[in-house]
Every structure is written in structure tokens, then in C-alpha cells.
Length: 125
Image 1: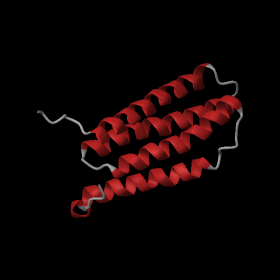
Image 2 (image 1 turned 30 degrees about the vertical axis):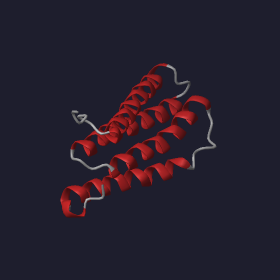
Image 3 (image 1 turned 90 degrees about the vertical axis):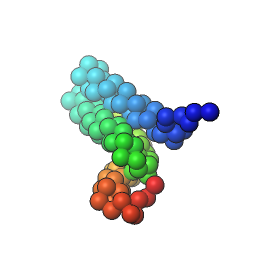
Image 4 (image 1 turned 135 degrees about the vertical axis):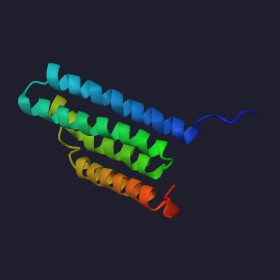
């Protein structure tokens, strides 16, 4: 029996990255076409940019064979972008506390990726 090319984790993480990319493109389009104010457009654009950059970061982490940064990027991009989208689209601000948590998670993902690349003997996953 042939071993699958990608592990279950890699497929799920890749799918998460693809979803982040999809939502980012939708948010960026919404910022240009359905935002009701300049502030709403800015919120959607910032969320879309963060999410799109980190969709690519998830793929980069998987390509270099490290999983933990990919997890931090997926969680962080969601926690950072979701409150921006909700605020920009519906004026809903109750989840604003998630943005700093998402930001810290994204920073942690980058630190972990850096450590995995520079200190391969200390690989985190």
C-alpha cells in the first residue's frame, strides 16, 4: 500500500490555509465593493491582508517541514481578522479582544518558524 503524499495534518493545515486565502480575497473585494464607509473598508482591507499573508505563511511552514508555526498562523490569522471583518461589515465590536490574542499568536508563529529554520536540532514539531 502506498503512503499518501501528504499526511492528514498537512492536508488539514493546507485546507485551512486555502480557506484563509479564500476569506482574504472575499474581504479585500468587500472592502472595495460593499464597505459602507472608509473605516469599514480599511478594517476589511487590514483583515484581508493579515489573513492572506498568513495563508501563505502556513504553506511556507509546511514546505519547510514544521507544523507548530502553521498552527499558530492559522489560529492567529483567524483571531486577528475575524473581529476586523465583523466590525467592518456589521459594526460588531464584542470580539475585539481577540485581535491582540491573534497578533501574539502570529508573532509566536514567526518566532517558532525562525527557530525551526535557524536551530533545526531544536525543532518544535
